[in-house]
Image 1 (cartoon, rainbow, N blue to C red):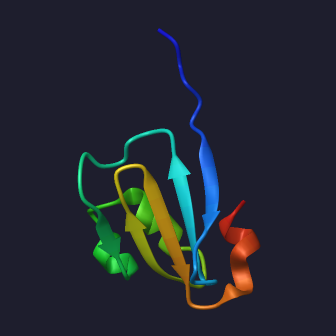
Image 2: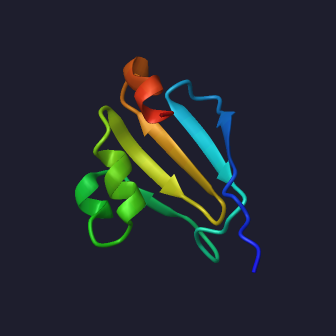
Length: 82
């Protein structure tokens, strides 16, 4: 069995406070899930919970093979991309 490494690519969006990460793995079969708060993510998406723990994340959308993260300000982009 061959293990394929997870590839994550960063894409910029027209909104300077939103970053899009594309993956070579499927996260959802169809559709997308939005998590504006940590409470919305709790019990639904461990990944969204962890991302909401980073300040100043104000929204997360998880799609079939992408994640977008919206920040309330651009102040902590480095922390997000670690």
